[in-house]
Image 1: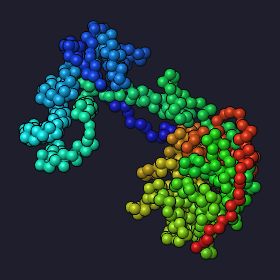
Image 2 (image 1 turned 90 degrees about the horizontal axis):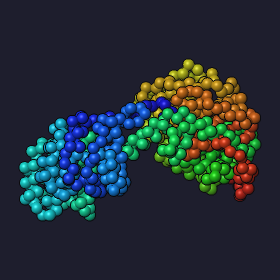
Image 3 (image 1 turned 180 degrees about the vertical axis):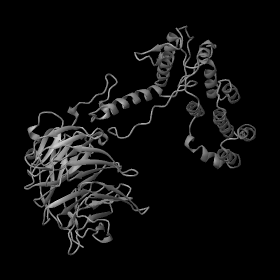
Image 4 (image 1 turned 180 degrees about the horizontal axis):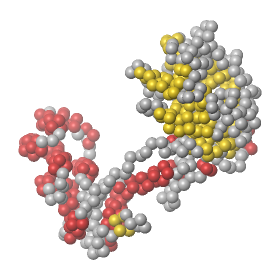
Length: 586
């Protein structure tokens, strides 16, 4: 993710010796070659040696390359093409011994397949036993299915048990002889499957066990190509495009044009400073809140345009923040040191009001189950409510700051809140343990990443810090360049795999950094007042929204001519009703 976490290295292939590879060619080719779906193997022709190297880097062995292509052709059902490639290249997919082994397994020649298995040359004794176990287990089941109970029992006693492995499975097989119902249970996934298909499945399981030099893994070429595309994607500095844009025809390389850096729409329904905004979890809505005492739900259309769905009016003070329910069907709005209101997104009706006598609420959020919510209180406590407005708990002593930000991880286990001016506490509710994120400067706000592993912390000294909180909290990146002197400025993660960081700024611009390197990659002009908050659409990496003191919400997208019909006015010609709250308080 943005260079923060390294992928595991590719699996190392097992290489055969030159002698082994020559033996694959010198053996008799009169046996039938069995591909994924079968098919005759042509007589190999001589070639220039299996250690021939191809490719400009000198690292690809010709024999391995050809065999993997041949394997792919057979897997795709192109049996004639696979056979022709074997004949023309002179490189057989498998040795005659392996071909014989495959044929014996598919024919149900169990004794012969076990004998041939020992001739393949497996060095690992345990691997040999595990492979034998799979073959004998198939033999055992087929004997039971043909009512050969005594032969099945003999196979279990004299062939399977002496292997001395997987004793639990041996006991399960023994129960099949005593009770046919156990046989049905063990073979439940294969009920109604023809014997030939079960043998093909057995061959696939054996292929996973045996070294790749003996039997090339299924879909190996696809895996290598996917791995190459994945490495290109991870090394793409500005990567912010969907996987559907990846192509085999050219190396992948995104430019800055894949970042939402051009104004796509300006929403002008608020009549005062816009302080907060947030896309819904599924990206189908955007909600904004303002000093004009209202919150607005905007609907995101498939063409990328937004239209006003509901204007939520009934707060007596400015609306500080909003919070989407986990299913996006409800929205919380929090007035400044006032009350929290719960709204139905579909109808725009207020369902409930939450308040504490003599105190004001300064933040709001949801528990992951969507059945409880929380709010910060002016007495520095955290209050827990059920949906009906009943206060079910109150956490005191967790906060010594009036900072409103509080988060709960998706598993509901960790509470994250600012407990002092420069300290964020991560409380593990199950273990009753706490960890601290300690900054040298006062904290103004923080944002939790989508995977709950990172925190973006905005500081009073015009820096944004990225902390990893997976284990012991550690600072891993600093972002600089934006302006903050008087106002609360919020930042967010965004883009594909949240590989970018965006923030508002008091100089009326939106700033975007590369998350992994900390480089500032964009500063977007357009607003005429301080940008207080930004939100990146979680479902559309090409859509970013910003809220400003200039009374507008600006939606950013990719470079293109702005459709005049995509303006706020053009999308707001439908029926728009100002919704009044009719909920009741508890």
